[in-house]
Image: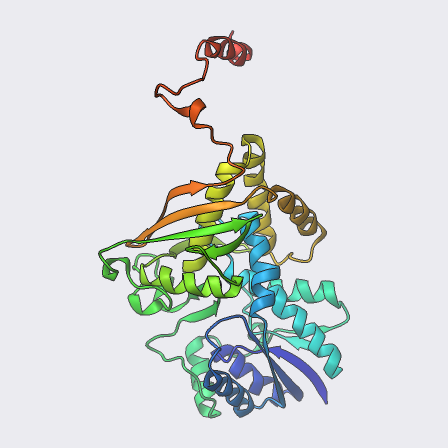
Amino acid sequence: MKKVVLAYSGGLDTSCIVRWLKDKGYVVICFVADLGQGLGEGENLKAIEERAFAAGASKVYIKDLQDEFVEDFVLPALKAGAVYERKYLLATALGRPLIAKYLVQIAHKEKAGAIAHGCTGKGNDQVRFEVTAGILDPSLEILAPVRDWEFKSREEEIEYAKAHRIPIDVTRKKPYSIDRNIWGVSIEAGVLENLEQEPPEDAYCMTKSPTQTASYPRYLELYFEKGTPKKIDGKPAKLKHLISQLNEIGGFHGIGRSDLVENRLVGIKSREIYEAPAATILHTAHREVEALVLDRELAHFKEIVSLKYSELVYYGLWYSELKDALDAFVESTQKNVTGTIKLKLSKGCCVPVARKSVHSLYKKELSTYGKEDVFDQKLAEGFIKIWGMPYKR
């Protein structure tokens, strides 16, 4: 019998896929990647494993990839300032190439000729999985049951799961499609497809409503060393733990929600809501350190690179040569990105209020309007004449 390795989340789609592939004659091996989506407790892992077996899986791999995810995927994107269409901090997009990497590795180990995913034909993740797998091993067959099967709606999938006694958490009343990892949550489907309706509170997973948060602000300090966050409130923290702390703190203060009508890679627009408390806080702080230490031309050019970098991540081109080249550029910009940023968190807002760096390019004696001013204002007239010369007619 043919073997296939399935990227298994434990959700509705992939649970139905296990049974559907088995009925097609495949031996289905499930791979569960723990990227910090709340699988830390043993009983949750066990429940997902049992669900996979109940659906018909022959074997289940579960791997804790949180450290690799934050160090090798999240951190480079943070240093690059990668934010897609100004709102999406790329949590799901960053996780897909890592999952695809392990799908290929497990396929080699199990001598499977195919891998499979649960992405739809109009989503972005299908591209991310398949392009990555094609780069790493073009000989593997790729199966995408959701593009081929007979179900026309999530409601039909729910009925299929019930008929085959597959335990699922989705109901008709809350039919959201949710993807979560330590860097954030992506939420779509259901009532969110109505652009005229505000997202209901039950759609959110990580954050309190800004209107329901504490009336007092929370101040915190983040220390970066060469672009890498190293300390929170003066205490050293491993990146994974620092992100987890910021998710808890930020979520409590309603930080990190976004509602975006975005341009999908396949050419359609979709409405997604996102939660990314830690990512929002870290991107805000990282930009502030860069603003302090990067010269104007480098800072402005890096904005262009950031835009392209976000597109490469979103488009599933993590393992492309261009992305490797941009990584080298980004890393070169981070040599002086060392400093401390103080942030104020309140009612869904994350605001920088103080900053310092040994590499700061800010000179108070040049900027001040006080008596310490050493700026020779008489030079401005000549500068303006030369600067404006090409535009005089």
